[in-house]
Image (tube, rainbow, N blue to C red; front, side, top):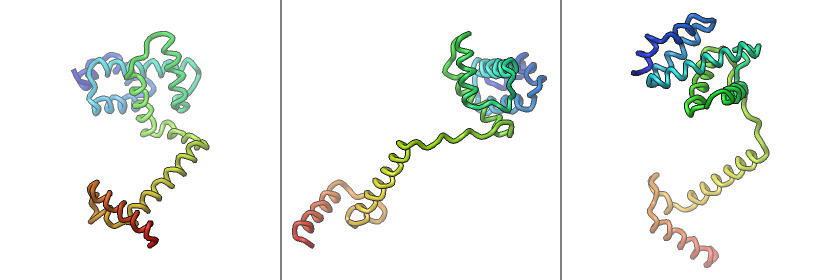
Amino acid sequence: MIAEEYLSSSRLYRRLRNGHHRELVERYAARLVEVGLAHQRTCRSLRLISDLLSWIANSRSELTDLDERMVDRYLHHRARKQSIQTGDRIALKRWLSVLRDAGTIAPPALSPITPQDQIFAGFGDYYYQTCNRLFRSDRGLVQHGQRSSAATRRAAISRRRVAIESGT
């Protein structure tokens, strides 16, 4: 049974659809149908969203406060009561995506760039420029936009060695 068939007969979906977040729940259900989830995963996803909405209300937060950190806190809370399945994080990310598309919550915050990230980016730029310079300096390496064979590369390296040794 696919998501659309399940949603037509689900009491949980009807209850969520009749709640405060009707439009968002309908968008989420449309996303589940679009993805084509099976009956069990659709049911689990809706139950997860229902529990998340209840948890948000009980913690005296607002749906507009929801972000990845809050989802992690919810999963930590949920893990104390029952097991977390592999698809739960994906279902919650899908819910966050629906909320962002609707403009209910802010886009994800960009993580700050660490010094290690800056070093890796700098090295990546240097490496790209160096390799690019080497390949452009020898026409034998790249001919007519196609990669040359290993034999052509070896011949180009030999020509370069001879040129260095002869001083030209």
